[in-house]
Image (tube, rainbow, N blue to C red):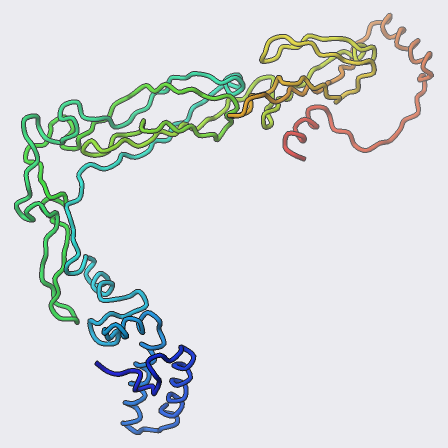
Length: 374
C-alpha cells in the first residue's frame, strides 16, 4: 500500500496543520507552472495531491491508518461516500451482502381529514356529535388475508420467499452483484394464488361508518380533533390511520366571536340612554339583564362576565361585551316635538354651538374595526 506519509514527508502522528504545511510546500515546488513540463515532477505532483487528499481528510486518514487505501479503486472514497454509495448511485440497489427481507404486505392506512360544521352554542358549551365518514374497513370476507376463504398466500417460486432477486452486472468496477425487488411477488415474498373476490386481494373494502365524537367547549374554526385509529384500514388488514375533524364555526345572527369573548349590539331608545334603565337581553345562557346607567353614550360597552365561549381544556368562559347603539327617533308627532323643544329650552340648546371633534365611526364600524384588531 502506498505510504502517503512518506510522500508528504511527515510523521504518522503529524497534526493536520503539519500535513497541510507539507503539502503546500511540495505543491508549490512541483506545480507545472514552476517545474515546467518535467514528466517526473508532474507524476510526483499527482502523488502529492493524492496523498493530501487522503491525509487531509480526517475520515479518509482514519480509514488509511486502519489499513484501507481510500484512494485506490474499491477501497472506499471517504467523506461518507464509499463503495456502497457508488454502487447504489449506479444501480439503485443494495450492495453485496446487504440483507433484503421480504416487505410486509400489511401497511398502515392513511389518515382522513373531515370538516365538521358546528354552531356557536356548540363551541361555547361543547357538544356530542355523530359524524359519517367514507373510509376503508377490514374486508368482512377474508378478514384482511387478501385470499379467498379456504386459501392462503403461497411462497414466491421466483425469489424463494426472499422478496428480492440477485443478478450480476458489469460496471467500471468490474462484475458486481445487484439485489432488486422480485418482479413476480413485488417484494412481498409471497403471491396470492386466489385473491378474495370481495376486496380484489386488497384485504379491505370501502364503507360508510358513523363515528361518535365529543366536541369540547372552546374549539374554533381551524381546530382539529384527532380520533386515533378511526381512519382507513391499511392494505392487507394493516393498522388503521387516524381521523382528523377540522372545526368550522357557523356565523351567528346576533353574536360575533373574538377569541373566547362574544360581542353584540343592543339598540336602545334615546330616552332610555339618557334616563337609564334595565333591559332584558337574550344570551346563549337565556335572558340576562343589562343595566344602563343614566347618560349612557352611543358606542358604550357593557360587559357581562362569564357569558362568552368556554376556554378550551382549561375551564372557565370568556365575557359577553354589549355595545350600546342609541336610537334617535326620525318621526315625531306635534306633542313629542313640543316636549323636545321645551327640553332643549330648559337645557339652553335651542341654538346649540357645533363642536368639532375627531371623526367618530358608527357603532357597527367601530365594532368591526375592534374585532379586526384596528
